[in-house]
Length: 106
Image 1 (cartoon, rainbow, N blue to C red):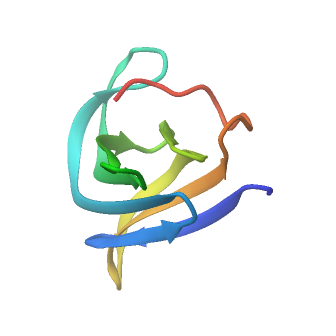
Image 2: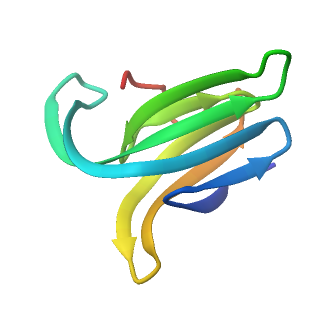
Image 3: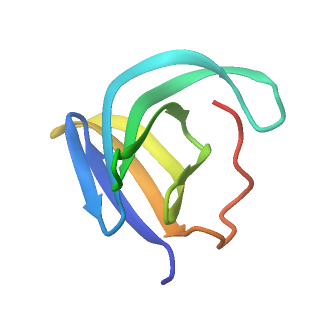
C-alpha cells in the first residue's frame, strides 16, 4: 500500500482494518517539534483504538508534522484546520514499518 491521505472531521472517526482514529478538541497549543524546539500552532486530540480484548487505546495531542504509531499504520499529520465543513485533521497513513519520518514525542 502506498500512502493514503484521509480527512478526519472533528468529532468523527476513520475506520480502517485494525484501527479506528477519531479526531477532536482542535486548538492552538504549545508543543515541541522533532528537534525539541518549542512551537505554537494548531493541534488536535487523536483517539486511536485497536481491536482486542480489551481494546488497545491511546490518546495523542498531535500537531502538524508529527508522526504517530497507530497499530498497523504509521500516521503523519499533514494539516489541522477549519474549513466550511468545520474542523479537520488531514492524515497520511502508511502500513507500519514503512518510513514516513521518525515518530516525535507529543
